[in-house]
Image (cartoon, rainbow, N blue to C red; front, top):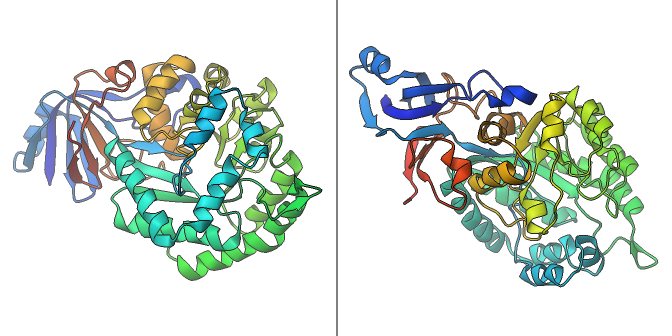
Length: 423
């Protein structure tokens, strides 16, 4: 057993996910210590009491540094090939996201590169990203498919994620997102045919993915199924149809909602008991109230409007006032938010979403774990949880949001193993 002791502050986040104003409660142990056995946390408490209780255990002096749970990133599109740097320039020249997408750029551009990449190429590019993400403090990450949009490439993305989950220390929670966009082979009169593609997803793809998963990953729970419900993408009714079919097959649900238009997707998420509703930039007050009365977690992705140079962000204050669960994620993707650093997302949320540092940290740890249905395993520092935590080069946790773009994480502890970051 290892006794990590003399931390200035241990942000335990004990007691489960927080709604609304309870997000201020970080459950801090001052001058604290953590006892770890193998990959599990055994005990947490003040250093003096823990040293008396466990005098024989191997000590690690934390020298008055802050300790907090490993970040949980509950929304990424991290498995892709290529980049879209050219589109960044196009946006700066005044093109909108949907204009670029309708011109053959956007998601479809990455689809082409991902389809052409071999398994080895796709795995290597994704592995490099995940290694950087891990060293930036994310110990559990959600990763979506959705850059294949055909059965063969979607399965290739699933295979890459299953392979990397076994190879790397970071835990990967997988989401199938065949309903990310309409592929070029589904067109009618030169326009994307979302109606036929929705039918294809429901009648062919979802049953095939269910069968493939049971044959190839039977030891794992089914992946989430996600849909991009948005003006110019899948309508509310198309999203409902896809998610209803997924639910009938036993898949847990997620949904992209209200990034550009308020279509009612947040209320749909609550009605279908989705684990999370993500983006929620344009969500109206009634949808917020409906969501807040459910167990569905609102996931804010401040890196995306920041990446698009937009001024509107997820309305965190309204969600907190309504007593909703609120989490944060990077939305790491090649088009709008190539961000591999949850600490920057916390800093951004404090400034643009007007969240306090405790609220943002809660949203990046225990609430983010709930957005993946992983809150019984990770997201807090308490006995029985996996030993996933971060050691910061500071004695005050508020520096995490205050000192943006300053690497503060000196070590990542993942499943009880200590990884120095070089910072």
